Length: 216
Image 1: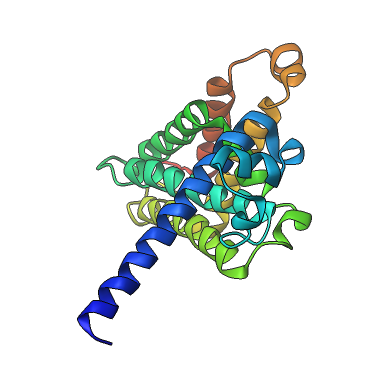
Image 2: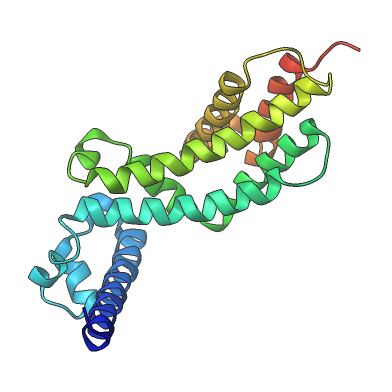
């Protein structure tokens, strides 16, 4: 391929990526405002100032657009969590920073949190290319792996008991997500729990730490 053809190919690829990003920005706006079930491809096309058929040149379905936003959210969450996990503190304090970072992510970007969990539904996942799903799964595993490494450091230093780091990391991850999902219900949050989400998450972490802290 000559230089002229290479530049033309690169320009087309850049233009395609730009168009895809613009469509995704419109999809983000529509999904955040209306939710997955109520949003339509037609509305996303109108917001993009494109024909509905044009969207299908870039995304195979509404579900794929939704999962692309899930992947976007995972990138943002991963960045926040990795920053917390890299702090030079005792492992138990690092885990506390992790919970604060996740809570902060949810407070700043609740729509992304909701997208990440609805995107796990089988009827959504079945209409999404495997590579899109695998990318997000890989990022989630990387975050969990980093949590497991912190727990392993705590074991190595004698701070934590000899536990399975991967199981504990998954347990803490599930606790955080479960509490936040419960607080998505205003009746539970305001009339049943009657404590702040921050307090509930702190309580979960304390329970987890009490179970793995070594007796000194």
